[in-house]
Length: 53
Image (cartoon, rainbow, N blue to C red):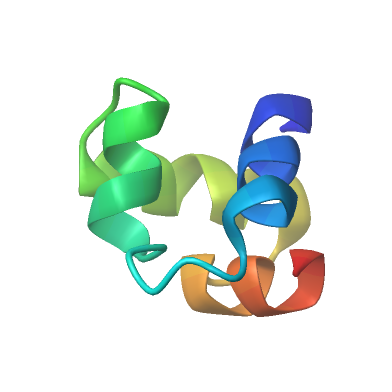
């Protein structure tokens, strides 16, 4: 989670920050990313990116 939060914070101004980009940076599939973010934060990936940025 710390790495995901750091990545979003560092790249929030980049237009390329989206689910596919974040999943690639974390070396996981979009499905894995959705499940992990939902399990830990009870948010969708979109909500997580918006809240972290």
